[in-house]
Image 1 (cartoon, rainbow, N blue to C red):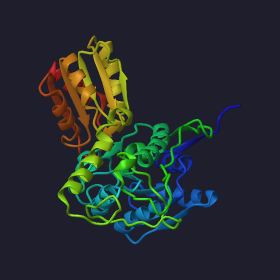
Image 2: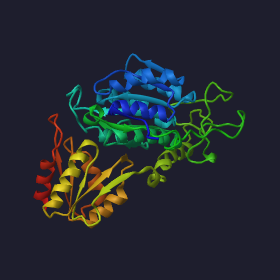
Image 3: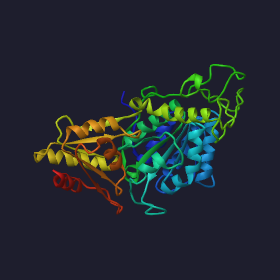
Image 4: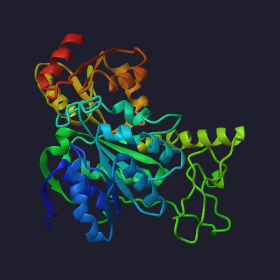
Length: 377
């Protein structure tokens, strides 16, 4: 029997992916170009016994999903650049309190209000460094409507596995394009639930490192009562200023991602085996880059595409290997240079590196990418 399919917008695919992953709570505030996610979630959640709430602003939306997650729900919020800016204080709270949550950022031009209906890829560094302090970050960047569905499911899995916020970076073009979506059968894609405590309420400590770098998380409202704070804390969740406890907590929260980077990272490589020039691109720019590779190959240029699907943690090891393999790397992105800095940090001058950016509200074309490739060779 053929699987169910539909012609869906990327934003719609995201909502369906969240439901597949077991999301039961959406808290958000409408903002172009992400509003369709909230609209579809408002229709789908009641059908699965979930709850939808439109908050008074983006700060309230982030607070709502943190609270719902601590009560045991898988949660989603969707916004765009200005909304992400408003969320940053509570993003930091979700990081230090280790609250699983998924936030979709449908990127648009900026700073400030910028170009609300125009595409952009300008929030790459915000996804890593947006909130203050040392903290780990996980962000994924799908490049098709089908991949938005599957990467939304994976984002929930990562949030639940590592007990932290995970961002989905979608550029406006993919969010609003329509493509055929084939819905996976239940169980076809892995769906992960958070680890629950194996000890009773009297023995439970919400941040106890003796249970590993990702301590189990009980649900508030159950038999477990525990303290959560945005301050540095002891294993029982209550604030502490003891240097050894603060240091251990900070390092553990970084380590839980860094030590599992190989499991978190996901990349696509196209014609990279014999490539002499690599194009490193994500999202809609990677689709133009793929066409550029095909045309360049037809002209005798050994080009290849490396597409990081997981943007953070950045695949430093593989990009370093590519830097030693090729003569040059070109980084096309719809900003004036963000991903290229991660590539430069990884390659450490092992090859020629150049970028091509665009910030006029139009997508990068294969011709623009090919021109840059020919310029650097």
